[in-house]
Length: 143
Image 1 (cartoon, helix red, strand yellow):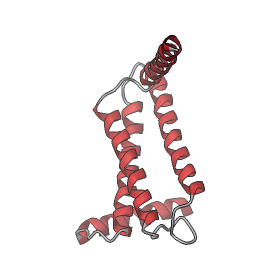
Image 2: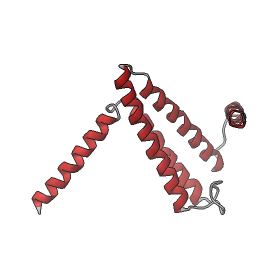
Image 3: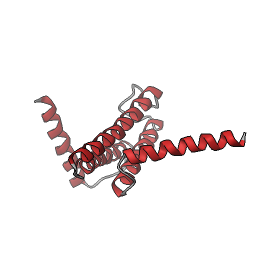
Image 4: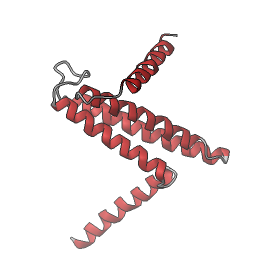
């Protein structure tokens, strides 16, 4: 039984090492991305338990919506792996950082949106800037 446990742990650690190598190694940018992802999931769950979510009919928790959110997070990680591979091909270090930066900003906007749904007050300047950014993104989608 002990040997089986060691074998399973060894396989798990090997997979973790392979995944970390595929992500370009652990650095501050990747740590920030995972932190932002975790905070976004936590804030989203709090909003849904407060029944203020705009993603579900009653505003409450729905496992399907939660699964879709986690699937999006997984796709973000896959895109970081793709950007890391592209950096290796090009011999540069720009694609990975650009992808991580984009998704960190995206997660930050989601956290702020969830906090606003919970009723956390924000300075008006930040809210106006976010509204302008959202309006600009909506106009780009319409084009």
